[in-house]
Length: 182
Image (tube, rainbow, N blue to C red):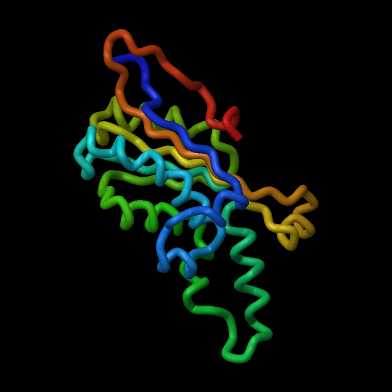
């Protein structure tokens, strides 16, 4: 086993949320979790090829939870204070929990703050070590205008998810970076 195969990929932006069907519960999620969840939705049919307890989740949150943190901080001036519901998403790993719950994925999970360069390598290591048979890798880059002003970057709202499994003979390694689809 020397390669991984990307069996499905799905890039999304904030514009895709308006036509999404994530259900009524999704309105309570922060933007990063909604985008990550939406990116994973089209991959879900591939999850049946691997036992759900053998599917790992690796997420890279480029700006961590900064945009959600800004929204939470703004709530301090509201009557009743900041939203307790939003508090759960002030951790960049919140999206992993939402994906795991929705798709009943109980394998290992990892959250990285920063770029997505290590995602596929980490997925490969999880699969090669026998800790997982497949891995959902999500690259999430959420910087709202308010957060962009703080870190002096341009606003961006996009996510990309891929589902990788061990290569079967005859299938080449299809991707080496997740940044390309975005």
